[in-house]
Image (cartoon, rainbow, N blue to C red; front, side, top):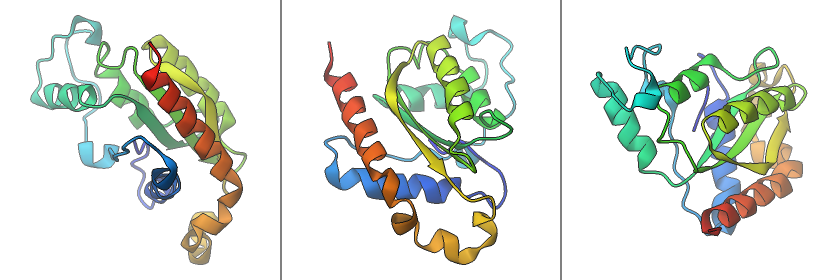
Length: 179
């Protein structure tokens, strides 16, 4: 899930890099959900998500989509030592749909996104997802999006993180087959 909707975002590039890295070695099938395309409004359901009562069509469609997946990998930038609000908003529309599903974290920032990943881990615990311990914390230079050449060779520039991607995939695979 691409967890940023900011204009000129690099999150789709990071998510694409993750897919290019993980797909050849994985037994799992990965798909992308881009929250910019999903385009949920700020939480507008009158009932708490835990009731499962959804008044709006966009929420019912979101529920069906989330239910159709067995696991999730959340790809997001660290904003001010936390996760993006759009990602939390997408989670908060639903409740039971997330429960028990394995979840992985791929985050990035100038210092790797570890603080955002830690906070996101608490959110995943709160919705009863089964978080993979392995995480991919990418250090991206602060000027990366302003230097067109930097984003051109993500495979080379992020090669040091490939073992982290493979560990995350292996753990998600194990979580999916665990009783």
